[in-house]
Length: 240
Length: 280
Image 1 (spheres, one colour):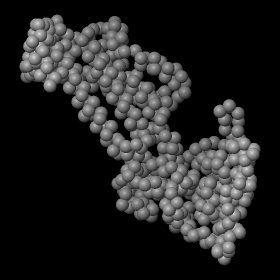
Image 2 (image 1 turned 180 degrees about the horizontal axis):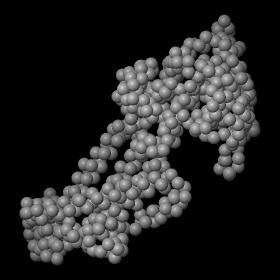
Image 3 (image 1 turned 90 degrees about the horizontal axis):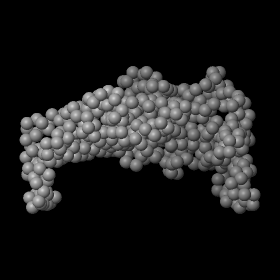
């Protein structure tokens, strides 16, 4: 339906093709891009970056979350800072990153990481904090302490909240990545968008947009939804 | 004495940061292998005392010794069964039961066979691989008991373990608990607000007064324990405990509802001692 309307309007509209390409034209560019490797390369590059950035962010987020949860002093100091930092869109860090690291891959990685870190920290903290006292008491009476306690009780008990943290963190870092690549270059989907713009190839721009939407949907629906569903099944849906 | 509670005092801060004494000068001695219950109105500090024995909380004054050793921190020799089962929802029944054994560094196979034995004892062999949410409340509590017993604790601390269950399940579990107690000779320290439960299960009942929590009276229960049918002896004991508690219940109610409220004159509970002698 939407496809039909798109095709008809673009053919009837007075805008030139390069500004408002028709669906068939877009699909053709998309297909060619995938076959020639132009788009696939960009996808690979972008995914590589986000995987690294995202992973680092998750690890830092969990560690910071642990310290904020565990130590009152850290909570009062760092906890407050994190909340403040969380409200800064990560692309705002980009000028700083360029000055610090130069206009390169590392800058993009930096904002991708920083985009996800604070959300992850906040979610991890509240996940740890909401571990039922009962579970902690049970584990302690069986003699669990230290790292064992963390690994067998605190982490698994906060899994539901950590998953929702991952989900938001992913969305944040994905946005940061696109913004970073648009401005920073160095290959990737964002760079391809910028290229499409400067070459006046709106069919390429729209192709990339479609790819971005598809990847976003796949990750959200396939990866995170499945994770969430598995946990719900295992725990019993309304159990907490 | 096996478990010695020596001059324990404990205070908490309320919302106005005032110190409220919950336990005052508690001295209890418990013999090895006995079944002791603590009954008292809500808020009398009986659960607090249990947490102190478990080592989950620290007393302000006094000390608790188990077999001559002072209790400093929680440990698997003093396992607690809580009011809610507190099973880990991310582990299966078997994994829940072996949790403590693995902590003790017991080999996997040995832990498993031990856990299976205990689960058989609580009649849950069929649910070994289920997750907690698939079990009923009574079954969960059974798993919790199995998880505690598998540790072969010196003392089993039970904090109102059956109060969230329905009457039938509770009756069955009473019976099973008594069987387990006889079989394993474990010392049981049982906190409850249910007088009948205390009388039917335990050998000795310690009645607590409230605000601050103090020992009001200690009663030994002479009866055949089958955990099911109340007989005249248990009914009489129940009456005794209730009459001791009446004053305390009144105190709590007055505090909650104001001074014009009286439990005694309202006769919520019918006096069983005046019935037609059906229990002769």
